[in-house]
Image 1 (cartoon, rainbow, N blue to C red):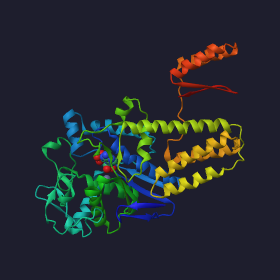
Image 2 (image 1 turned 180 degrees about the horizontal axis):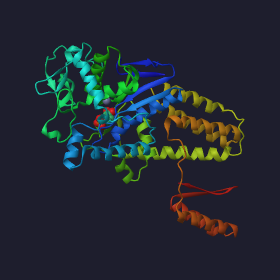
Image 3 (image 1 turned 90 degrees about the horizontal axis):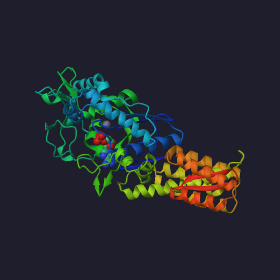
Image 4 (image 1 turned 45 degrees about the horizontal axis):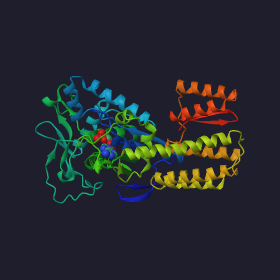
Length: 464
Ligand code: AMP
Ligand code: ZN
């Protein structure tokens, strides 16, 4: 398997530290609001990554943190007059519901920052002892960037013009602001009742230290893969490397993978610009999790993806083609035994799919293989050249592909009672050979968006 490692800016063959186990850390949401679908692009890419690794036989241990203390969560809790815990638990709950609607496999661990303050304090103490951090006059602790000669190696920064001693207290800043960054922030009035005791007095951790401390706890000091959206590369991931490697003297992470942004009208989808949609917004417009999942996975993760409703409608059409084929294949192969083999066109798709995901998660290639297979499969069924047993094998191949893509399963259809009643009336009309009425009911069903097909096993209903 090959990945584009942001660290080297090259495609590299993936070799985990342990033979068959992969440890990966994925930066999770700041739970101050509903996540938008730009955020979910990042979580979807990580889902495809984890599922692909599993497909190729690895055991995956994935950690995704929940940032439940920072400026934004504190401001939100104060503005709404509820405790920080109550405020963030609403958005944690919504986040997990959203992951489920998108069919994202759960990570093994979802550590919350507020549950790991002692681990962060301990790591900060180590950094002070080793001369990589210092306490400022106002009882904050800063990481001393000049103490770590490799600083800038991920984001490829030129450190020549850096001003020694300049400090930033915010968690997010741009590349021109390279400076000592806060590990611990002393309490001030704007923090309200949010603070923890520490050797430096009342305060709270910075954002970056959270991920280093929690990844150490769950994955160890060195692990295989670390991911996030490209905006996380600097300063967040650069700072994570500095904190971790300064504390341990060991290489922190072997492969850094970053996804490009989801954009709207050529701007990054983000809360601050206001051009964002949450999943809830899209559900209200009648779209389903599966369609949104399809849009988010269909482009290559390193290319920016422009969000549009046209893309969602196209996803609906593509999924309709997949469903129609799977339904036909299932009916066609229902009587088949277990002794089939894959026809050549399906064997080709199987190899192509494997090559596609191994090639830096080339999902578009995998989808192209699937649509080729649908084309060839329909021709083979039309010509009666596919045996029922071989058809079963093709169906199983789809199940295997679905382990990675998670959109290929036929959705369960709930048939409204009114529709069910019309189908019964139509059957009665057919039983009494009233073909005119039967056709009339069929047309009525079609106008209501349901297609009815008569088979030897009775009438089959499908959403048109
Ligand atoms: P945040 O809650 O802002 O810390 O972001 C959570 C995750 O979503 C991070 O991995 C970000 O890099 C990622 N992210 C934020 N906005 C976008 C976007 N428009 N497209 C893709 N990923 C994003
Ligand atoms: Zn992080």
